Length: 500
Image (cartoon, rainbow, N blue to C red; front, side, top):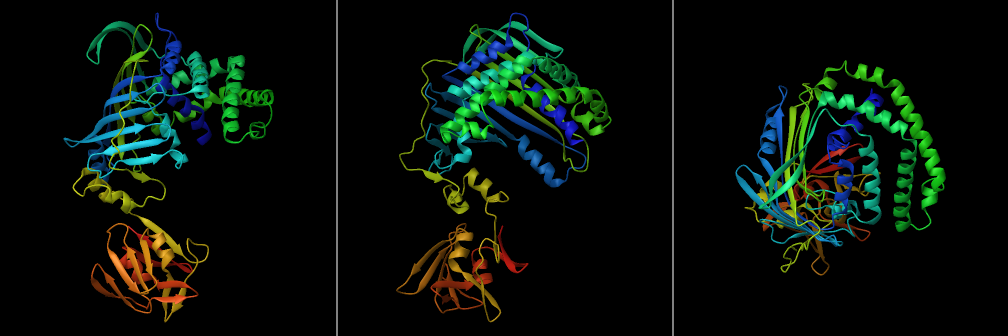
């Protein structure tokens, strides 16, 4: 069953996004979309909202989540993309009649985010956060307008191939209209597309047949993949491309073409029987039925640039005990202006400093950067998981060292503090240890060879004395973990320390 779903679902998702691909009237959609990849600078605005419809099996928590999501709307009031790739986005998140303003600025070095209620803007360095480097390629209209060099050429080849073969749905039209864009009345070409889930299925096979017949196109696309990947690999590790890609460009293309050709032949041979089997499933027919639908309007100017877009997509979900949502509706609308004009992104004011965000940024550090009355603080403070920590003391765990004194388990205080993000300070002269709780900011003072702790001025008795063994300071695990807001539970031959 998984293999059969793999055959249809990825292509169906592509069709949802790219529906309507052949020329309609005088509008050459493929070339128009490729032309929009050459946008160097642009200003735009956009709104995005999601509506969730709870199913009959939804519980109170599911309904509450749907209510929260349904009250949200993302507003991008001003997005600016400079020709050099710098970008700014200003807008608000609307929820329950309130608005949370935000201001984002991106350049090659990183991203700065200013949220209402933040004491300092957040700064994420792309150099030290490789996992989120893709954020630097965002554009004001969430399009591919900021693609550069090899990325752009590769995207053009992929889009050209797909738009060559994806068939048009039955409900597609082109009209000449006048629309207001950023206060200016423009003569535009409107592309209107409507598509339902059941029609999506009928479009998959013609797409596969068309692709299978384009032998030269497949080879060119595989070659484009090789060129893009080899360029990327050579930039990061010179001389590695040929080894990583399994040979020369010709070898890569020949091998790839053979595999794709064989796969397409197998898929087309079995397609009708496998689709018939899938359509026996009520769940499949719900998702790919008439209640799943997308309606989109794209408006092009005389130069074939997209100036306005709107989309309304509804996805019907099967009614099962494991599906708390019966329907998801996504609505978005955007407009663009000053295309390839003189656009200057708006930097975030960082005169008062920034909070550098990285993998080492603790939850408490993040929370303390927001005023306690701010919407962001209240949202984060109530969010499940943001303060959660779980570490294991024992063999093959996060920390292996434990000792036992009088049936009390003690652990190196450095390990416990590190695991729970507590700040630790040692005063050798007074033999005092100070721990600062990451979440609450509570200060705990411990003294060597004493079982007394002082927590924010209040005395506490520990289950054992603080001791020093071979130069390391050990503290009673359960007592000190409790002071730092965590609980301890035996697990196997060790102990799990959990903070909610």
